[in-house]
Image 1 (cartoon, rainbow, N blue to C red):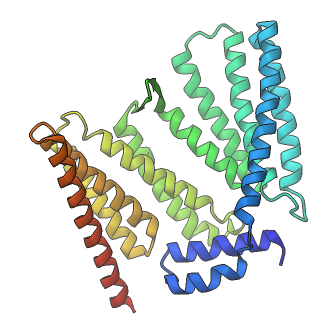
Image 2 (image 1 turned 60 degrees about the horizontal axis):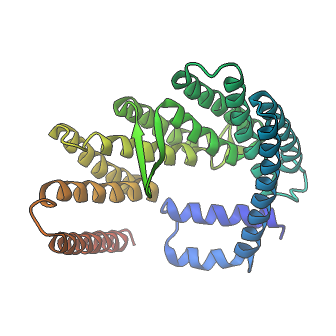
Image 3 (image 1 turned 90 degrees about the vertical axis):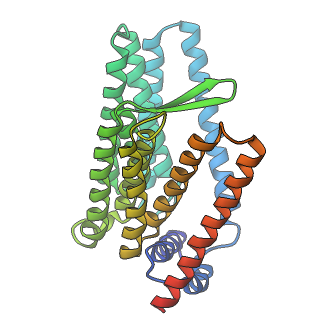
Length: 328
C-alpha cells in the first residue's frame, strides 16, 4: 500500500474514534494495519533536516542584509526565497504520484511565512509609521493568501497558518516578557469570543455538510476551523474572568464549559468534550486560586488543588465509563 494511502486511512481511523463512531478496541485493531514501523523517527529526521536547511539559508540572508544595512535589500532577498519555496512546494504538493506528501505542504507554508516577513520589511523600508495598525493588516492579508493557497491546492498546513495569522491579526498577541516569563493578551475579548463562536459554527458546517458534498476533497479543513474556534473562544472567556472581573463572566465561562461537554456528548465529538473539560478545570482552578491563595499556605493550597484535580478526573473518567456502558 502506498504511503499516502496509509496516511489517509490512519487519519480517518483516528477521526472516527474522536467522533465516537468506533470504540477504543476497534481503533487498536484497525490502526496497526495502516501504521508503518519507524515512521515517527523518519518523519522527525526529515523535519529536523528541513528545519536546519531553512535556518541556514535564512542565516545567510540575514548576514547579507546586515552587511548592507538595508530593509529593502532584506525584503528582496526574503521575497525571492519565499517565491522559490512556494514554487517548489507547489510542485511537490501537486505531484500526481504524491512522492513528497509532507515536504511540499511544509515548503508552501514556509513560503507564506516568508511572504509575511517580506511585507513587514517593505513596511519598514517605507518608513515604518503606524506599526500598531500596519502589522494586524499585514497579518490578515497573509492569512487571506494562506487560505486561498490552501483551498486552491487542497493543503491543510497553509490553512492552519492562515487561521493562526487571522486570530493574531484580529487581536490575539503573545510574546516573551523576559526572565523566563511569557504573556498573552487579547485586545478585545468580547469581539474575539464572537468571532471564535462564528468560526466554530463554520467548522461544524464545513465538516458535516460541505465535506460530505461539494468540498469532499477538503477533508480536515473543518476540523481546523473548529479547533481554533474552540481554543480562542475559551481563552477569551477565561481572560474575561481574570483580575476581579464581574461574576457574570465567571458564570458565562462556566456555562460555556458545561455546554461544550454536553454538545460533545450529543454529537459524539471528543473535541468539544475535551475543550470543555480542560477549560472547566481551568475555570475551577482559577476560582480556587483567587479565593484561597492568600488564605492558605502554599503547601496546603497545592495539596488541596491536587486532591480536587484527582477527584474531578476520577469523576469524569467514571462518568465516561458509565456512558459507554449505557451506549453498549
